[in-house]
Length: 295
View (cartoon, rainbow, N blue to C red):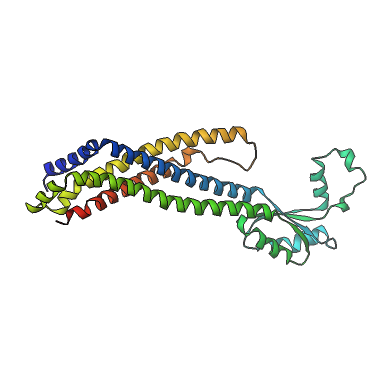
């Protein structure tokens, strides 16, 4: 195919967009709306996973040593066994004396008068690798001889894991639905252009034009609609994310609720939006022209 033929086909693709201006506008608008909803849930999922990772790094399991064991025995015999558990990231031994001093930091010293070190137990401060395995890890630590009790915020961790799973499933379902809606709208927009040119397509077929030659302008039209929709959706998502993240940061002061900066996500979001726009546009253009080529 000659270079001027490519120019003609691309030009026809652009011309089709302006011929059906309202439908083209509707296609771009629907694509933007679908991508923003899809992107918002994806970004929410990313932030929830980030929060869970932060909680996993900040929250600690406390394993209390049996009262019959001395500090030296506990440190020598138990720490190695706790460190050997797969999900344990870090273990720090704290004697009853250190525990009392740590406790006194938050209270007036006069309130602790008469309370000796023996009131507190030797303990291990444990951090986990995977928060979702907290319950299993708690049981493994409890099975170690010499460990009497393990304090772990399992209920809190389980709730966050449940929220993450729900958001992930909802995001996946919405992505499938919204991509299908965008594909439907773009396909019907191109079908309208195709229907108006059905006689021209039939004549082109009869004079020997190939299917690819006839299909090309409609695929170009779909690609343009998809790319424009994806690009505008990215800009809108950027502005919306910055606005909401700023308000959330100002209104909440909870340590583990942190918002991932858009500067760390923009390339991923841009790539996804443009890829979805291109795929939906090209696929929509291909489907729309399919039936009209059967002449």
